[in-house]
Length: 81
Image (cartoon, rainbow, N blue to C red; front, side, top):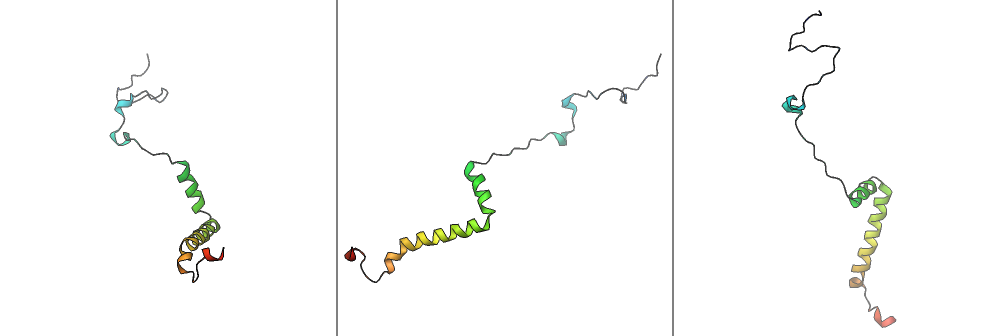
């Protein structure tokens, strides 16, 4: 007959079959991550490219000039059409 192993010592030749409810409390947590939308993914990639941001700034400046420009024009535009 073989040697008896005390109940609190595991046999190194046997796999560990402890039930999951006996896991330590520190490991009992859930990580919740929300998935990003396509727009958020695209914006993250876009922000990494400095030249693309410069182009966006220039585009924004041109649109702003087209909207605000007629306020500062010294002559009526519609008369010359």
